[in-house]
Image 1: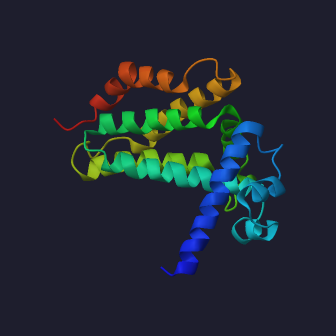
Image 2: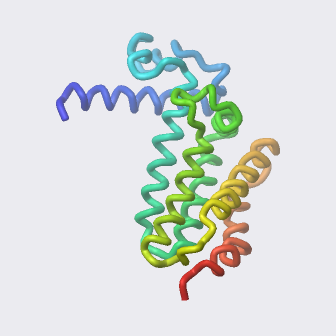
Image 3: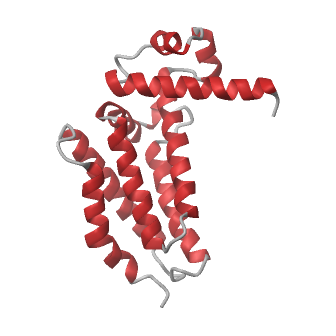
Length: 198
């Protein structure tokens, strides 16, 4: 990779991180591109080199963070239940730490795919991640071949998104991460156990 490419990657990363900090405090609607670029010390034109509109930066942020989380979960040295617990609780923790304002943008993205730069939502990426964890466990011989991956994926995604939405609606009056941990502790094992190879 050339120095120019490395510098471009750093600039994009800086724009994403700066936007995240501002959006977490003010929300996307109250954040302007000028505010992001000024805080980064770059021109508005630099922003448009990487993004078409400010909504795209939220999608890029989610894409980067949750792809990284998926990769960590795949590499997590434990059984499928523990990998799912790691993924789900880390997912909840990241959203909770990011702020209600950013969570609202991700919820909005899940509802309206037109706001994503490529028409894909954060929801579709999260479905792919959970399905990937389950498929990986079938391939490595941990789960039975006839494990209903699609049904399990939909169920676990519904749990994560239902809890995320309720946490958001409540104004963050409880811990999303703790609620996800309770689900994992009390219920997840009984869902997964029947599909484990003995």
